[in-house]
Image (cartoon, rainbow, N blue to C red):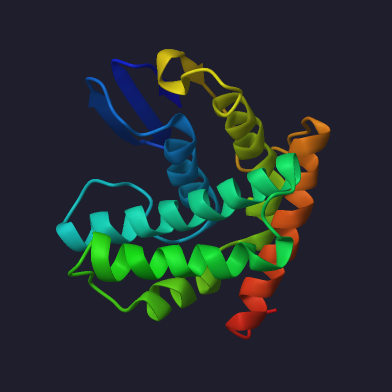
Length: 185
């Protein structure tokens, strides 16, 4: 992943998505796309047909929203932990039925697909990458004014700050709740 104000590029294997010019997307959202690609058999690359693109965005936004809510919880404690998943799913219903309407499938089906195809162990293990980036993005400076780069392998086991590691623990609990919701625990 190489991300600057004027050029954003994410690559997974031989597939590369890039954008030339400014964007209003934060680097962590692009990292969510990469984490989806590295840990699921779901759409991650926002290129392709309209349906494919919308499903890729759903998957990345689900992960990005969940991670962000966890980030606020572990850093600030403002969001009750028990409401993280519910608030995320409420946002995803809005995403499907309002933001990206018409969406190719129902919100519940999109959530079930995510839970069915996610490799929980991998995505939990890799999650500190996201939490470290999120913490830097939310340090009070403009994250779109910095250059970002990240190179990782799906077998990596990153460490991180205490906050990032607490984020991983809470994320593991949330993933377990999600898998139980679709009877995959």
